[in-house]
Amino acid sequence: MWYMCVFFHRLLDYRKPEVEALAELFGAFADDNNGEIHSLEWKLPDRFHPDSPFHFVNIPSEAIAHKIATRSILVRGMYEIWGEGTSYEQLEEAVKAYPNEKMLPYLTSESTFKINIDSFGKTYSTEEQKELLKKLAFIPFKGRVNLRNPDHNFWLIEIDKYGANNGLPPIVEKRIFFGREIGTADRKLLPTYQLKSRVYIGPTAMDAEMAFLMANQGLAAPGKLIYDPFVGTGSVLVAAAHFGAMTMGADIDIRVVRDGRGPDLWIARSNFPVEGR
Image (tube, rainbow, N blue to C red; front, top):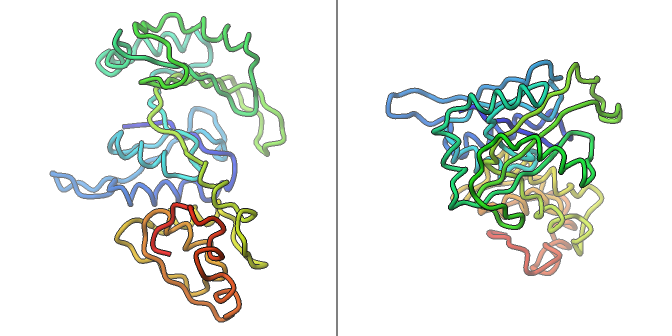
């Protein structure tokens, strides 16, 4: 199944490798009953730059796509795209052509929903968002709107002209996507583990984002042992332990191990949800 993967616009070289690693962790490459080995395929939306945050990726199941999106550090969200176009007329035509059996279960009168509006490098005022929502009146929603805790989240993503401060060339033409949210990132753990929250850090202590990215690419999970031979102040092991892995480390400088040990020094907050430290 093809999903649109929207990345955070940072650490560009690490984006696809992290997704590939998490796909392996969650069984995307395991043999199925026919002996076929799954692999991830990638493709760009029409006329998009390779460094764009928007990519389509073929993932074996929605469950795996959800797990990747909710654990990834660099994936902003995964979406099942119901339609796309260069205008709202094209978008309407594409959505109406999407298979009913895939749409109707999420449009029932018993379910609640919310439509989110997003773009890349652009913000919309409240009035502009209302006008955009009116353009989606052709979608036969029967349920109630719930802005706080909906059963289903939908996204209208409009890609138009953006500033040059992102390092990308201007897009050739406007592109509009509409689809259902499969999973979105939970980056709240990064402020929890940020370096300034620790009692003790060394001069080369690794930033939490990079540490969690390395833990993901190292397939950290319960039942895994992560060993860091140059542990320093333990940033990588902290991230790996958060994901349930057993951790061990060593360092030639006894001072960083000595001064960073203990529940009150190794981690700045004793209530951090870390296992295996």
